[in-house]
Image (cartoon, rainbow, N blue to C red):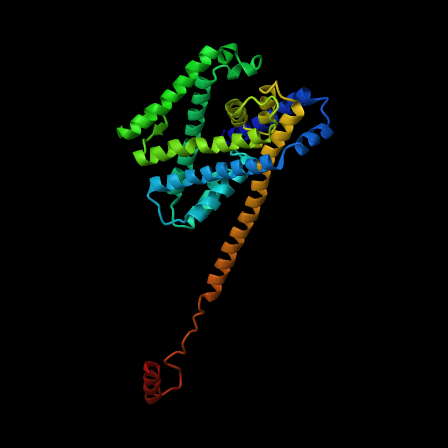
Length: 350
């Protein structure tokens, strides 16, 4: 049964890529590569630079997730540089390959155990980073649903009517914000862990919680900013709408289990932005893929290869430095008399 369950999610992810790819093709047929290339060329250089800054903000926030988790564990001896490189490599790989295929725990385990952390500590770190990301999604999702309750009407015909109703959206947003508020109160009051069947939520110390509330949304704000800066100013609905559509697209991509959300993310984003020209949207999504997925992936592969090479060279060097034990000659050799044996003892003592 375990082997069957391990095959289900990759199959679901592959099916999501195929189906969304077909639907995306239907949405974009008639658009030429020349039109998309023209839209890419029309993006001003300064907006490319702003998209690059937004990328740095996103990955800096992800590194902060790791720092918060280490602080929760009481680990302070690991440098900021090491944590940042480890976090960047972890997320760059998992974003592209998919969490179901390549868990971030693998890279973190190799890196942090080399710094003295136990397997149990690494497991807690991974879980807390995932929870911090989820907290950011809930917080921002609740905010945009309350502030812009008509956002989901952009997906009418693709979502159940009850979800695209503005009144329902505002209620859902209030519930999400209420969940975050309860988490904050539980931490401040140091309540006992909340247990629901196999799920157990332990409230962190207030100083950890405050850092989570600040860091959690930053990654999503940075990632959404990449697309916002790559979109043209004409008919641009504004950052809040782009953020809301980004959250919906990103959530759909995560649920689909498609590697990197390929196809699913683009499909939802294109459908939810009917007022903008399709070539411009595709160009902005390509910039997002390039800055957030592809370039970090290439860099992370180089980092992993260099790190593993360094560990191998270090291991071989330590092995070469181990002195080879040379057996001493025996004290007693057949044919020696008592005087010669006594002389050998004195020489060895010296």
